[in-house]
Amino acid sequence: MRKSLHTPEYKRLLAALRNARAHAGLSQRELGARLKVPHTWVAKVESGERRIDVVEFGWFIAACGRKATAVFARLQPKGPQRERAGKAGRR
Image (cartoon, rainbow, N blue to C red; front, top):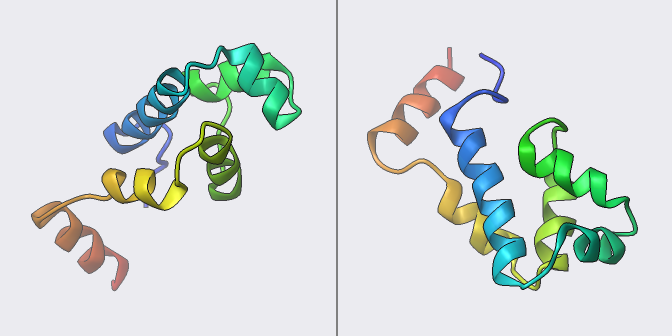
């Protein structure tokens, strides 16, 4: 399996995080304060400089007033792409 950091899927994840914050009307500083992290943490996550795990994803999205499951569901591959990923995982 290849590293996910430089894939189109990870870029979509980062865009979803930025969009969630923007739609909540929060600055990086305001979101950082809600998460009790420095605003630079938010900036590094959004730029891809710092990886985010699934738990942090949930915290980030919840702090923006959204449901992590709904945001994550929109990031899932659809159609043939999903099928190929499943076959690759069985090898």
